[in-house]
Length: 293
Image 1: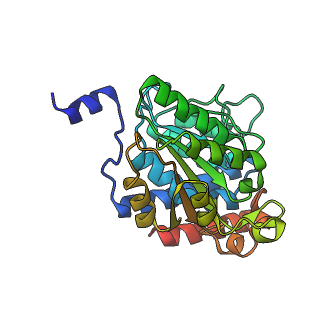
Image 2: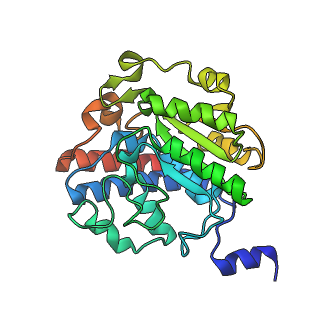
Image 3: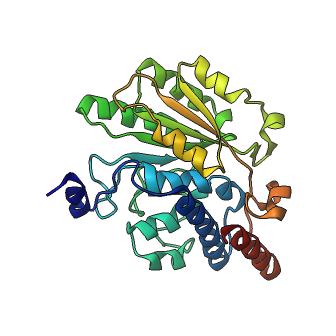
């Protein structure tokens, strides 16, 4: 039996597996449509900040990370932590599609007692490596997981997706210092730099630029990309150093809040959380489908 056959038999999704740019672009638009549909059924959800990271989530789960959906707690899986936990609605369609749980669970998203909630809960949702509520904590958790991997002699990576509003949190910068101090080349931070947070433009609330230079100053390897260019996202993740290397990586993904829907792009704060009326729902669907076609 070949190595590839062994992976297939175990249900393992290998790192940097075959998935073309075109396929991943189509899957990103599929994800936006699913986000619309599931939120519409639930009656409330986060649109604009989820749309900004659709390409990043798509490439990570359909190409980059080593996973076993039928065995969510597999010790050698790559870990993923959602620092900006309010965009969990962007994870649920992907995890259901990969087989972590039945697709029928999506119909109960947001309902009292349902396993799929507005923020990820590791106690109820297979495929969630750590819960998220208050922002700013998960990079610290990622440092701990990366240190544990080193101590146990494992080569899995830990990916942490943060928002640029989350960069305002002081605890995050303590984690940035710790990661470089402990030489955690198995840790990857991805900043969804969409330029906006719940209180307005990040540049006005608390300026965080120049982001790449700041991470570099703390000893990180830093890559800056267009977070909506699937080719650039693929290249950034395909070229990650070996997990045994001694420098953590930060991928600064420049994105647009509400990407894919014109009226959300124009007013990102208005669509941070809400529900679309029937006409706007159809308008949003149409715009996304036109891009997908």
